[in-house]
Structures are given as C-alpha cells and as structure tokens.
Image (tube, rainbow, N blue to C red; front, side):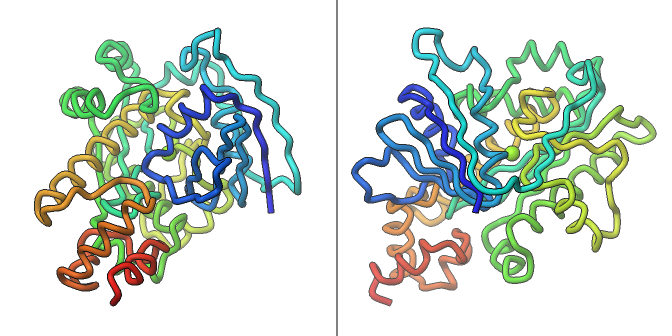
Length: 320
Ligand code: MG
C-alpha cells in the first residue's frame, strides 16, 4: 500500500480540513485533527501537523498539497513540507502540461460529492475559450478551495452565463442503482467522459486546443474504464491533479459542481425536513438513523449513497 506523509503544520491542516469537508469520516483518535476518505485514499491529519495519505491514490492526493500556491497561506504560517514516500509508486502520471497551457482554449472537467454520504455526485465540464479567460478571472474564478460556499454559489450563475458547460447530476437514488455494477472510479470515468462529449457537441464546430480532466485515477485506468463507452473523448486529453490551478476551465467546472451539490443538498434537506450534512461523519449516521426510523431503506435510498459504511452504523443506531 502506498503511504505518503507530509509535515504540513497546523495552518495547512486547517486548510485541508476545509478542503475535505465533504469527505470527512469519524475518527476517535484523540491525536487526530480529522480523517477524510476520497477516491481510494484515506487522509489522517494529526494535531501535530503531520498528515498521512494511504491507499492507491496517496501520491497524487498528497501531491495536491506539496506545492500548494503560496497565496493560499500567509508567509508567516507557511508550513514546512516534507514528503516521505513509502512503497512502490502507483504509476500515476502527473504528466507536465505544455508551456503556456493556462492560456489555451480548454475544455476542463471536475466532480464533487464522491465523498459525501448525503447528496448527489456532480460532474461538470466547462469550455473556456482563450477569449473568455480574462472575463472568468475578472469574475473571481479560481481554485474553489480558496472560495467560501457563498462565493461559490454567487459565481456559478455568472459562469453559466459566460461559458458553455455541461453538468451531470447523479441523484443518490440513481447512484444506488448503478453503484453495484460500477466502482467509484469507473463511475467517474463514465461521467467525465459523458460531460466532455456532450460539451464538445454543444460547441461544435469549435474544437478546444486541449481537454483537461482533474485527475482522480491514472490515465491508464481512465482509458481502461473508457473502453466500454460508446463515445470516447480521447483526443488532446490531459490529466493533472490540482487541475483547477492549471486552467480556469477546470476551476470553473469545480465551482459549478460544488454549487450544484450544495443546492441539491439544500433541496433534499427541505424535502425531508432535516438538515442533511455533507461529508460522511457521525452526524451523517445520526441523520440517516432518523430517516430509517421514518421510512426505512426505501426512504434513505433517495438521499444517501447506501454503500457507505454510514448505512450500517445508522441501522445500529436506529435499531432496525
Ligand atoms: Mg477533482
């Protein structure tokens, strides 16, 4: 198993906790600041400032933080970073992008909701023509982990007015139907590909100079899962982790996803009359238990991703 340890400092740990807020899981260890699970990686941050990334995608996920933009932290609190990589490399190719890439006309894609028990999985693709880059920047489009939820929800409608986009929202109910046949990575490959394919059809005959997927698996794995898809987007396709820092198309896609996820969670909360939390912590177990008591699994399947461990915990709490 790949394991990467960063000595991040408490300021960056706080920043990470915010970044992973939709993927937090319970951790009773008194020395742990938080634990989060994202696409095959378990992230445990300690109060000491040490952060451990474990699992097949550990290298790539830790990489998000090894060269975080200096604007994200004040100089005074800039953490010391030291990576200790154990085990064999997982083969993820964080291949370099061509020079000047950030100024190209690019279609970019990202997703949100994969690590949250309640709420949908949202994937979005945005086409940012080079002519629109200045306007996107002017709007305030940037790395969504540097934006508040309120800012994200204000930005999303402005982005949708300015640039072509394609959003796909997989409701928990749909997700639960598909999940037994598709693992999380497979599902994301299908959705990113579908969003990009539909976006390319929308902008045709215009063609982007490149397509950038915010990397969540190795390119080889991506291509493997793509094989069964009828419309494969593979031309001029690039993958990079922290994609939102490399092109505004991915940054904008990430904002559309997050805004849509928050909106769906709010709608679902209003519908069921309970505040559905994002993430996958103990609060999610408690709310799920109340939903089970109200309407059993047929009701819970409309709101939660049932394969998460939270379901079993909720059943115990609810005594069902
Ligand atoms: Mg992403």
